[in-house]
Length: 226
Image (cartoon, rainbow, N blue to C red; front, side, top):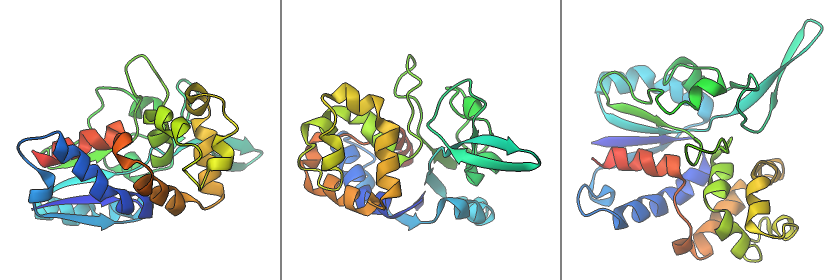
């Protein structure tokens, strides 16, 4: 009856826990009682399903990253560098779904606006990507991992010895504010050292009742449940 499209292995491993946590907070429209297809698709390929999803008119949630980059020019050569999400820095997204489909914006400043549309005109397809945690903060994750760290910085600090994939790195920080301030560096370490899957299993096996679903995924799953 419904579908969830997501980017990679980490989301696939954690999605059952996400839905379980959402269901615990709801008395009606329980996700685990609905027929939902969960489909892993690389970020660059979600756009390939646009025509099919529009034809099927299937209620669909797309979970993706904001993928902020900075344009750099050297002579006639143009390149794009991965950077942390910041406002008023002329940053762009490299995410083809966000650029050409929903919301159809390339500038990160536009994507971070609270009133930007995240659904198709018929309200059947919605995109979920990291946003600021609250209206007074511009702290926003570039990827799922950073968004998780931002929303769970206390959990990350309290369990720094148990999160084995990155424990050596986390033990360099003296408090949860340090974790929050260095969220991009932590996710960059996870990415560069190919520890995404290990990190996901750490979250499954380390007091998973104590962390919360990243806010943008929670919002998306609650929309899908209705």
